[in-house]
Image 1 (tube, rainbow, N blue to C red):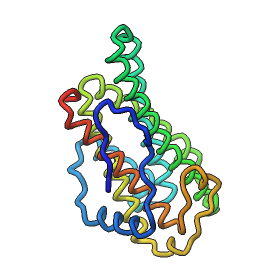
Image 2 (tube, rainbow, N blue to C red):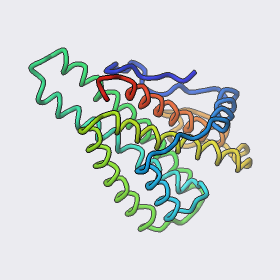
Image 3 (tube, rainbow, N blue to C red):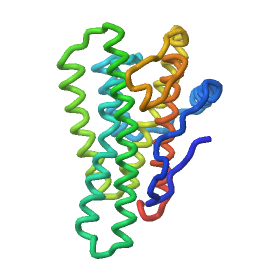
Image 4 (tube, rainbow, N blue to C red):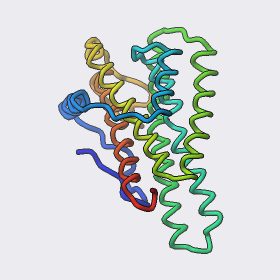
Length: 233
């Protein structure tokens, strides 16, 4: 059910698959039954910091912050790959493989961007007022720090950066699944957002969040597949 990425493969249909309501429920149960990864210290520190600033309980506003941060490893990897292409364009075969990595990172960024836009819309529709400092300024600071950490790890040893991203995506996957489980009223909320045509149409907000959780799992498995490739160790 869950696809994994092949090293240096140029994606043809890069977006994670959209699942039926029955599949989404099954995948949510699968997530809830799967233990979380043994997160590395940097990931645990980030999650604790977010809990301290935004509370330990998941919320749509907290998910929005997660998605601001979630995009930046893919941006960092794309940046490093572009630098590699710039210095190795005289080797067309190698450059082509690296450019395939650029395209894959861009597709992953786009998927996370849809998550952010949709969550912004859901928060706005809820009428919740958010602090500019906590929900605009702090997320950008976190994203900047996480970008440079991901960039540094990737330049030192790509597998380290992929491992950190796998931790982050695993955390997000479980947070979304638990939020849906703990908020049964989401089953009765219709999802009719302005981005439905681009991202997908769902019977409820619960199914929408289940799909986002599954997307995060797909990204996690993509990072895990990279870690297993000897070229990234």
